[in-house]
Image (cartoon, rainbow, N blue to C red; front, top):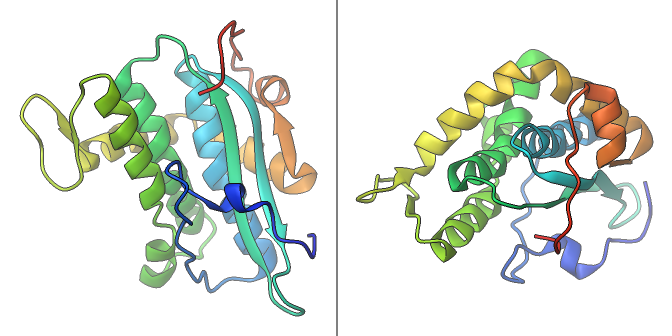
Length: 199
């Protein structure tokens, strides 16, 4: 853990707005591992859906003496990714985080609520809209899907890939940063090459 906060852009959503800070009533080690599961969910589903993963990391710092904060970041590149697969990997972080709480005997309603990742949902909505796909927050728009439907897709995939997500999360909490190739080596998934720019 560092005493310096990460750069401001690491704490902002895709629009440059600061992401909300949520209180997670857990020990530092439990919260750090939970964030590693969140990022592992993004990374593993990205790779499983054919995206090139650059890095996935958990970031922890001490805002003031005796306190701590954690966040994470997964960088990937997309090329011809089906839009609903992209949306499902956006939802996978929160799903993996809540599943971690349940699997490790830490689940409470308050802790589950603190896993909320509205910034991931809003990112998915905005990206899909650029390609003419409609993703609704609470309802099913005509010709589109609701966020709840996308979460269902992610939940099934997270369940299917739980062993890989767990492996990556534990490695990430030990090493802090994993490259896509390291994730591929740990899981047996393929990190496809990419020739374009970052997404």
